[in-house]
Amino acid sequence: ALPAVAITVAPSSLPKTNSLGEISVASNKSSACPSRSLVTELTAIAQEEMEHFGMVLEKIKARGFTLGHERKDDYVGQLSKFIKRGGSREGQIVDRLLFAAMIEARSCERFKMLSERISDPDLAEFYRELMFSEAGHYTTFLKLARKYGGDIDVDARWKECLEFEAHIIQI
Image (cartoon, rainbow, N blue to C red; front, side, top):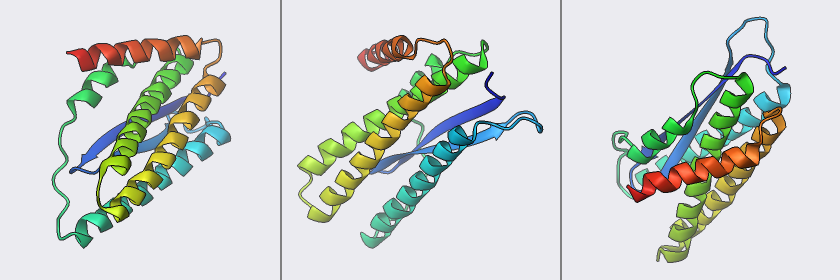
């Protein structure tokens, strides 16, 4: 059985540039030891996201701007409703990992479009690098959902997540 682990993904919007996925992992029992692989992979992503935040902040400052206030992201708020409350630990972890995968996949898509359409070569390369990173995060979250999902049909649940998202963006 999977140890008691809480995975929280709270994306924050950065003005006109990026969505930063902040990931934390915590055990809800002091004697429980979450899978080292899960913790290691999530920690690496969290550290990389913080590096991205620092890079974005430097780009903002270099252009004479200041970081604005965090804005509410209705898409993320609606998408978070996909996460089932209650149920098995595996189910909760799978839903949170799929939620994170969706956020990362959409970030990857946005960075790809930005990198291909922006006239500033420096920002084009910056967005391209972020695109590759977000693609890696997206696939890592899916891989982890499959690894820690137990008997859950993660691919079927991912399809449900995609359908849920399709409904959100049509509204």
